[in-house]
Image (tube, rainbow, N blue to C red; front, side):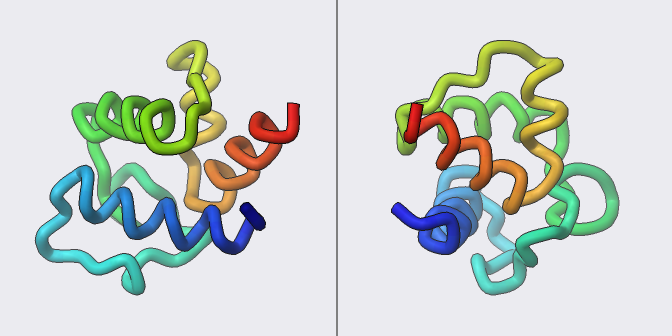
Length: 88
């Protein structure tokens, strides 16, 4: 999977698995913040679901909340992490 394919797949799966009814995958920019009032607007409950999504769909484990805070910045940072872990 290329980085671009991973980013597109993440967008689709985030909208679907997190039930973001008012958003489509195309609405999510690669570098928009995933959490907070700007960007995607995910919250702490979504963070738990996002960990499960990454583990289930991509086979990549998120070890800790501290690690997640640096990975879940944007689609780009999350895709980079997944691609890096898949190579290892």
